[in-house]
Amino acid sequence: MGHAVEHSQSYKMIHKKEVYSLFLQQLDEKIHIFQSNMDDLSHSIMNETKSTAGDKHETALAMLQREQSHVSKQLQLVIAQKKVLTQLALYQQGEWITRGSLVKTSMGYFYVGVAMPKVTIERATVIGISSESPLGMALLGKKIGEHIMVNGQKHAIETIW
Image (cartoon, rainbow, N blue to C red; front, side, top):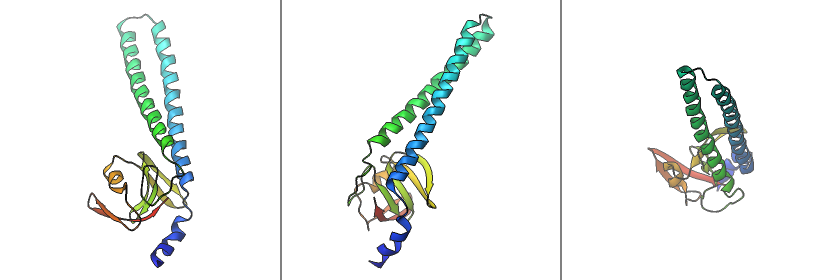
């Protein structure tokens, strides 16, 4: 029991809702940037289309259209990521790790359900991991006190939010 009390001080400052909000903010910022890029590209394509000066303009137009297609795909991926994140059970706490769980293992903090760049909260780094990743799959269904081995690293599950 002393072990759990020892760790309770370090994870009291981490709030699942705050982690969720930071991940959501990251995605909203990416969506805004990609939408802005799409607007800029649409404007450039419109200007290029007005020009009728031959092969040089056709090549420039094709390049702009390819870039627009690339940015559009990136935007759709981020929108899909946001949809997954918003569907995760934000307040679900339980004995077992599920999609949407915030987990502290001996190797760090993980938000299970969607791959995200790490965020730092109260000097703790939290990484969003896909539930389909090797670590995500290994964590699903586990309880506090259990151990998993992923890529040669042993994780002891210490806390689940």
